Length: 265
Image 1: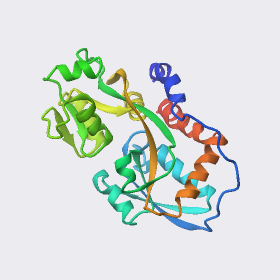
Image 2: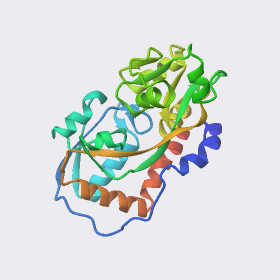
Image 3: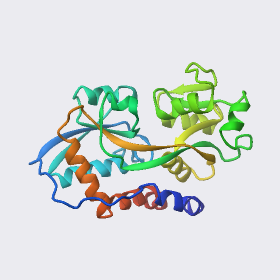
């Protein structure tokens, strides 16, 4: 764990890209219940505590803190990734969190908060991997396989930024969750996954000696919370995130989940 911290301290501390925020008084939601949903499959953003099986992670703390600041109660539920956006879009839940990249296609379907973190996407490979040094070496060796979760930004990055743009490319093996693709990587069923820096750091820290991050960033992506289109929560959530950024809480939560949680294990 110490070597993980030493290697990733600088980039992780830069993840939040903190900007000046407003410390103005926040809206009071008068005890309103906010229905939140996640997947519990994206360490360290959202996952099940191995000791208690309760959901924990950066996104849990972020939304719970937003609820506290807005005088609202947060009620958590779980959902598979492939139906989460639709469930929030149709109002089954008020807010969703699953390491969701803000992009134009999703913005046509759903409302986003401002980014709470911006991360780079990298190759995550086994620690003893010598064939893969970046996207060019992967693309050129047709024996190498990606693991990916269908419909995620990592899947589309693999298809359109590394390979040939064919979504049926046989070099991409699909899994139900991102965690399952990482387990397939560890067992040798695939040779790489594309993971943002948050997820890479989490898996490297959780399983020292199993994985490493290689190559230059493939792309940078802002992560946000999703809300029902036209939701009256967008403004209050953004105001709370601004306040958390300004008073240091957002940076403290990032430090907690990328450093302190791993050290305590």
